[in-house]
Amino acid sequence: AQPAKLLVLPGDGIGPEVMREVGRVITWLEKNRGLAFDITEDLVGGASLAEYGEPIRNEVIEKARAADAVLFGSVGDPRWGHVGFEKRPEVAILKLRQELELFANLRPAKVFDALVDASTLKPDVVRGLDIMIVRETVGGIYFGDPRGIETLPDGTRRGINTEVYTTPEIERVARVAFEMARKRSGHVCSVEKCNVMESGLLWKEVVTDLHAREFADVKLTHMLADNCAMQLVRNPRQFDVIVTGNLFGDILSDLASMLTGSLGMLPSATLGAVQSNGKSAALYEPIHGSAPDIAGHGIANPIAQILSFAMLLRYSLNLQEEAKMVEEAVSRVLESGLRTADIMSDGMARVGTSVMGEAIVRELDKLQK
Ligand code: NAD
Ligand code: IPM
Ligand code: K
Ligand code: MN
Image 1 (cartoon, helix red, strand yellow):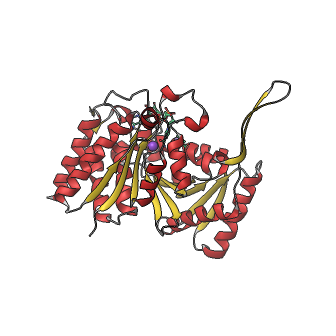
Image 2 (cartoon, rainbow, N blue to C red; image 1 turned 180 degrees about the horizontal axis):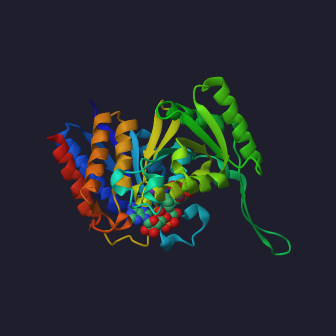
Image 3 (cartoon, rainbow, N blue to C red; image 1 turned 30 degrees about the vertical axis):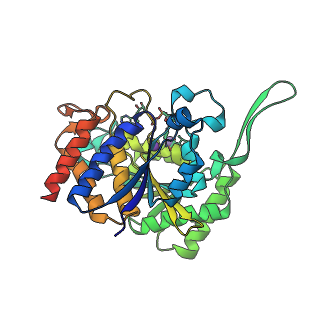
């Protein structure tokens, strides 16, 4: 078989630190599972701004298009905090999503048994939790027109963003959610604010119609986004798949990450539409950002990045067994009591980023035997 073509974009802050630990896992898979990866690495975000004066080069977008999958770290750098909007490091991920039409961002929040006590919520509330947030990522208020900052004749300034969703945009992400639910517990909760927003009203209508036409076997419920935030904390296990727009999905998934113990635990896969070259793109990244507050200290949790790579193995390369092995190795390391600072609790052994990565590879060794 041809080696899988991966584009690796570590980005800024803790991005390269946690990506290094995925490198160990890749090396292990090559040595022990007879797999071959054809890996290209490039700069994005602040790292690209420093080198090339732009957050992402077209060349990198073309490489992403040509790859079997993109493994993304995180972008964002306070040193570029005051540059114009189009020159912010974050443009790198926004542009990749848009250019590759990566519209369905799957964000699974699963609680490892060993981490039941790491959550800030009561163990009984989070034990066994397994939810999947399907976040739309190329539309909504992130990209709607008009947008901008303008100055009115009287000198007042106005910041403008517009939430826009079209029927095809809603339908395609809802379809992903329904299909996902069929493989899980068969329940989709669609989340919007149809009580105040027309885009939310259309969202609800389109999801309801699609459900009636093609997915009547799946249970569909609807919830207003503010209530959903509350319900996620009150009783998160009522959910199976949540499907929602770009902004609500961003916020609700960071919230959901804390049910699992830490933002440093949550991976994601962003799946795209079929492109003109016949391929459909896919990008994998942790839901967290570049964490400038801890970058450079070697203490970041690499698990979200490693689990994102496991999702890549599963969804893009159809390596189900290897994906399960990586997830199992993570689970066993947590059982063994190793904890990065973000998931630390009494009686556990606190380790840094690379010791955590090494330990995961050691567990892979044991699983292989
Ligand atoms: P963040 O996700 O970077 O960090 C939030 C908090 O969680 C911080 O206290 C951080 O230390 C902690 N944290 C995050 N990941 C961790 C990990 N793996 N291990 C341990 N602790 C971890 O969010 P922020 O601070 O609001 O944003 C920082 C920058 O990252 C901003 O520029 C933002 O735009 C960017 N960002 C990028 C992405 C992306 O690349 N897709 C995602 C989110 C934020
Ligand atoms: C995420 C991030 C991004 C988003 C930013 C960095 C553009 O918060 O991937 O969750 O808002 O989508
Ligand atoms: K990220
Ligand atoms: Mn986010």
